[in-house]
Length: 329
Image (cartoon, rainbow, N blue to C red):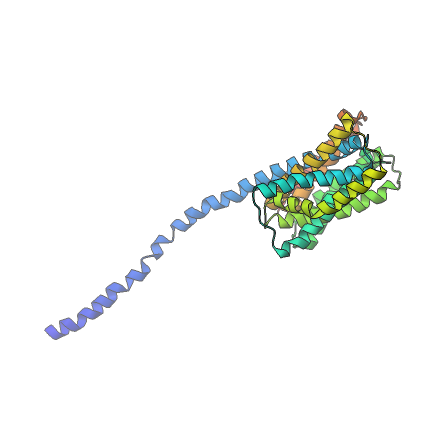
């Protein structure tokens, strides 16, 4: 009997050890509680991203009036190259002060697209267009830019916004285009070639910059893009200043400084951070408000007339923006 009892004891020990590994399973329920804050984080991030993107749009809306001011005493090629060179010096100082490492080799192709699109291409083509075009007519580019950026983003990154998003985006773009074309009399000029070229190249720069901003801080995206174009802008400024007029009036100085600091650097910093947070398609639709904001600035800064249709168009655009921000996908 004693041998039998001792023989059964190992079995009891084996049974008692079996529940031990299973004891962690009751501890699994706290996991959902830990995931609750994580679910709220993206919502806060989306709100912050929307605010940053909106700040970027506000900064961009002053670009055309600032450029018009800059052309008051500075030639177009000089204005564009000096703008890029000054922005690069500011960005380079920040990169150097913070000891930011050189980007990985795989990022340089994207940074080249950013530089070609938003550092050189768009500023140059729109500045050339504004020599013979009004700011209201040039706003046609901005009216088409959100839709073009959303399309290129879908092709480049695989983003698939919902049908509601595309419907609202098309409606908003149509409203802006109809307004700006009606205000310009519907006439096409040589400046339109510059504007349409600027539209395409800027949309590519926005798309690539928004993609890169998911892998590095937004200010570093534009910072390295500016540094990449610094040699070209520096050489271009030296050549342009020898062949164009250069007179620093109050308007031309303010236009140059704002386009270099506010639009070319700070505006793109918050813009790329916003795109990284809420996605390129949704951020791009906030730019539907940019032509109307540009028109308002043009009234106060350039003395242009505010048409009666502007408030109605603004209301329609705001509705479209609200729909695109709430659309799924």
